[in-house]
Image (cartoon, rainbow, N blue to C red; front, side):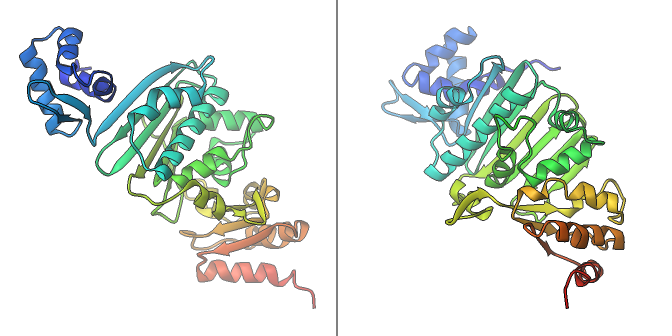
Length: 345
């Protein structure tokens, strides 16, 4: 691995440096890196040109402040870590965000850090936050067992890909006494882009895509769990907006609705044809009042699959409303065939 240049090292701490040393930034770099004043000033000029710092005051005694680009990172021991303290002490003070973005970023950071603390079984977690003129990015990466392996082992699932699918539904937790299972679901929808990479698998939710994505064999993310989150700084989205989409507010503030991407119910190139596939799909549907089944990218389904889902399950659980969307004509025909036998004349 190539050794980082002094400037690259400076970029890792520049936002903290400029806040902690607004009037003596040059001297700080001279002393910290054992470099000349001329070299320190060159680095500072480059930081200013690239947008990492801003200069005010007289040229002989400048005052520096953070620019539109900001970056903060920190490595923590998971033992005894309090995510709200990490946020309030090490990250929040160094970013200037609108109230709605501040609320979303606070939520995402603390929820994902708490998951690492309570579920990863690891020793360390790295938190990284970066802002440019348009977007804010967050990375939370631990060295634990990996979220998909954790869920698979805790729930006795046959395949880690099933763990990924269950996670996408929401209300999934391996520790119900301490967690509701809502953190990942709501966080993924607050951000423009949300990724979890672990155990050679990757889950992605993007605000501009109708489907959650699932990928296998993601090199470099076999051990531990890494979460990526991105949001536009100009976004008008609020946390309250997201909660309202999946509750019956104002009458009911329970997490009562979920969207299930049917594409994730497939493994590899298999088609949705069997009753066993449908039974895997409907696990934990009874925790919701409304389940929206998104058939985007599903061209057809089998009779047995449709019957198990829309007749057998629907008849046994009338309190759960199944709403299929984005159906092709072949899928719609199977849906109509299944529900027609449930209609009493």
